[in-house]
Picture 1: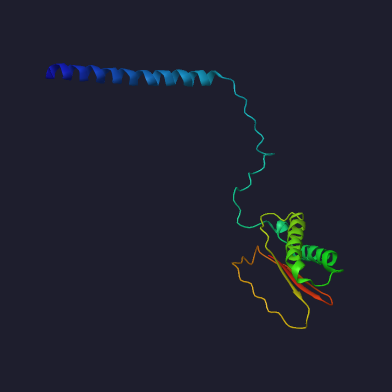
Picture 2 (picture 1 turned 180 degrees about the vertical axis):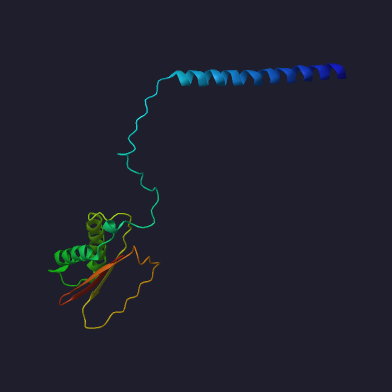
Length: 163
């Protein structure tokens, strides 16, 4: 019985070796077939442009955030939304959301690439008291910037920051 098992193992190993020998012949046939196919090679290396890098850390100089453009957007939105209003505590929360959304959408229309925008709106009643604000964030001095503007009338004081 041991001889029968060994002979079966020998026959199985011979079949594996035969199948291994057949594979290179098939591969060679495929290579020969591929070599017979006519391939036209275009030599446009002079006019070809190099591929853009897939990942960029910072925007290009012409794509950087321009604070003056954003400040103009802030100023126009504030004047349009608040010039005829007097302070109302119940409506102030909705005003700040509307102003922040409008400013964010208009700054997006300026199409600065590779930026996420943070719009911070502070709205309060004008009583002559001071306000102190502080903001902290991780900042890349070469690529990041901000724009700000404020609005004052008889009853409303507002400060807007865009990062």
